[in-house]
Length: 319
Ligand SMILES: NC(=O)c1ccc[n+]([C@@H]2O[C@H](COP(=O)([O-])OP(=O)(O)OC[C@H]3O[C@@H](n4cnc5c(N)ncnc54)[C@H](OP(=O)(O)O)[C@@H]3O)[C@@H](O)[C@H]2O)c1
Image (cartoon, rainbow, N blue to C red):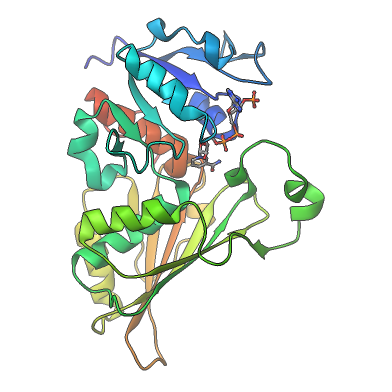
């Protein structure tokens, strides 16, 4: 693929939080040019020199690759239409994440499959961080599957999308902190379980509780991992360091734990571990941080698009 002839890319859902991030990243991408961008209520507005068109009016013939940041339940239809006329696609909604027709695009574990894929299902934001934190331990058989892995995660409010709802008003969110989707019912759990099983054979229980954090962007996950044997700090860090040594978008911290400032506006998952004392059975705390809009959505979609097109994987991205 020649970077001198940019690949024409179309974006569905360009007026949403993720879509805006896609446009921001594509504007700085030397190997891609934006050929259409869609919106619903914002149709007719101009962004990046283009007039936003309704999804039904998208000029699919102009694009070689389509990125869809439409709501789940709506995205699938437009992605199928693009596929029907031969366009390669990355879908950022949940519509294909459990589908055999798509490659689940957690780039670090699926790179060769992504390269060949016609349709990539971009992972959810919470699962991207949790999976990159858990897969190395699970692959080494270090997780005690007779006990639950507990994931407590907090996300900034852009994670809920741009559609206005009362519980996301500034007056409701500011200076507050609360859990939601309690009871292990969050819609990201099926893709988390399925991917962990596929990539590592893990068959234990996951307990996932998300929280709403009063910041615009960023997710921090505190993951309590029951271990099958004792791991000291250096050994645990060494496992991650070995697995991710050549990964440009995963940062393993040493003797330190990540926070949101390590990841916002970056296409990066930052990981840190802490050995857990004063318990009778071995346990490790893993902290994972991610920008929900970048490595959790638009950035990973561009990373996948680059892999699909044979471009340098991090072209147009700051990791
Ligand atoms: N937010 C995150 O952190 C995040 C992370 C990972 C994945 N995702 C996924 O990415 C997708 C987009 O998320 P988001 O947070 O950007 O949502 P959002 O802010 O609500 O944006 C949704 C986009 O879809 C358009 N749209 C809404 N209803 C439509 C319809 N019936 N027909 C055509 N277009 C329609 C909207 O247009 P108008 O605004 O002009 O009406 C907007 O451009 C979702 O599937 C979400 O699950 C989000």
